[in-house]
Length: 408
Image (cartoon, rainbow, N blue to C red; front, side, top):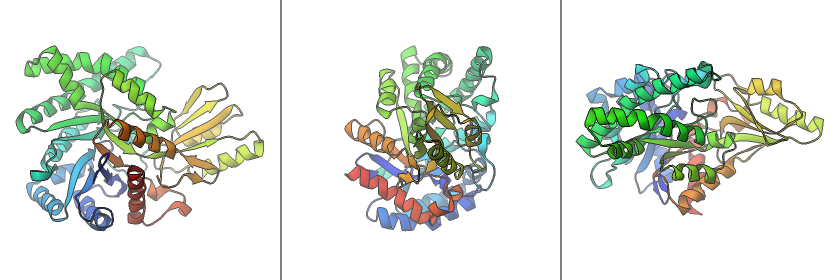
């Protein structure tokens, strides 16, 4: 949907299924009713997620034409895609494998290029033509797959992933030259990613992407150094996942200032909320808070925890079980990576990071920094039973909550 703050939709990674017929059936079952409710008189935007297998199946000309016609018939459009999860994302143990294959591999490159080719074909034409769009992707890799305390190994990881990523950037330059469409790859920092924070994204961009990218684009296209740099800033951007930055206690205004100071762009806001809690002083009350976190300890996804201790230091745990085992009396606050519903702020003794969403939307309204807003709550199937609603009702409530905040 076109709103005052940009295009808004929900990410279809909420739907189970890895083959295109499963994806398409889920869209057909969910979207017409959502559109009628939320955008009856204007086109309805979709944040499309395709697994690797589904992306291969959708490249078949007949299937692609059928989907394009369905979008036209239902007054819908694709304005962004999610290229982070490559394979199974529901009904299987995902955990750290959400990063696999990572950006060291040809498989990740081929998948991402295929998604961009599909996105270029699916973007609306004619009066509602879109000439700018992005695809979010993983933060290069998962840091626990490396000896992170070894500078040489870190350097090799950044070199290898950046070289692979540049193959996609070269394809985006060609698409722009041939079709006049500006597409961007939006890296999504998250806890324990190879890129975890705004500072790490900025350092990677300046220390690895710029020197490697300038050399590659000069060799491939004969661009000057300034043309190379402009192309890199256009085609490689940041995906601002509100949940991820909130888990790391990174304040939206500070993140955006750092990006602006380095002339870096935000390709997309993923509107999402994490869990948080401040621990009371009384021991029994602290144990009660831990018990509530235990209710969210499910085996499908990683639920990294960042604890703030009494001195203000941040302690990082790769998953909720490790944090529960390591809890001590110096922990003042926990934040956990669990994409909880946007429209709920209190979960008993726990809360959501809903305030960070409000702040990001306020900053977007005051000084727009992207054109794409995507609701990304994909954990409905693994929520505690008392939080589950019918899926379409849940999606509708998420979008209604965001629309209400936009229209305040």
